[in-house]
Image 1 (tube, rainbow, N blue to C red):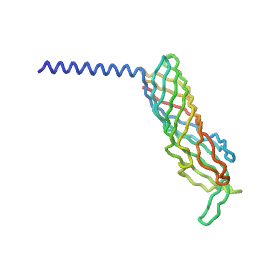
Image 2 (cartoon, rainbow, N blue to C red):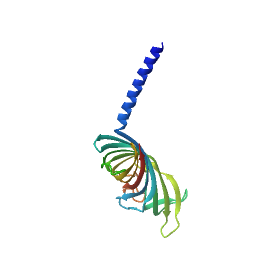
Image 3 (tube, rainbow, N blue to C red):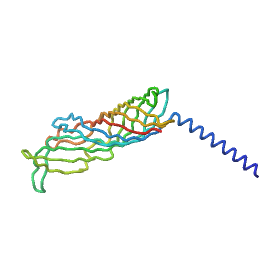
Image 4 (cartoon, one colour):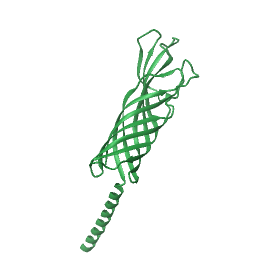
Length: 238
């Protein structure tokens, strides 16, 4: 009976050792990571009668999966929770009471839109210089809207006092999908083994129209803008 137990233990140890060895070998080609990304966001407005009115500061975060497929080349993916935004103004009309006619004025809107983004990119690394490794990255992102809000300031002609409303839910005015190009350059600092800190500057350039609404004053004019961000990405790979 003891021999059977010893044999079973030996077989179990062999299976566990083999599994650990396989996992270790696999991990050498796969790196996982987490990141946060404070960013400056703005809208590139192309529609007639709409204009850009400044930028906004946001904070995004995400997870990273890097798969090495050649020496110093990685296929990088994961997911990001993007906070995008920007400011835009245009002429609009507002009804001030149930029986009041619509009054025309200037609407200044600050947008806050969140997406879950799936990035797909190629990461290229240099050889290691001391504890530092430099990298560049290029790829695409597919974002899916999860929330959209605006803070609105409406000014009547000749008035410097705004009618202000905050946290207006505007998901019906924002397109669900967002496609973008992602460019990044950064540096990794080795902490030993496969663990490293990294920092990068990332440009996320939108391709598709953010909005899905028309101007109340000129209903034939649709809002048209793409969202961009410049991020300072900080994270940990392990």
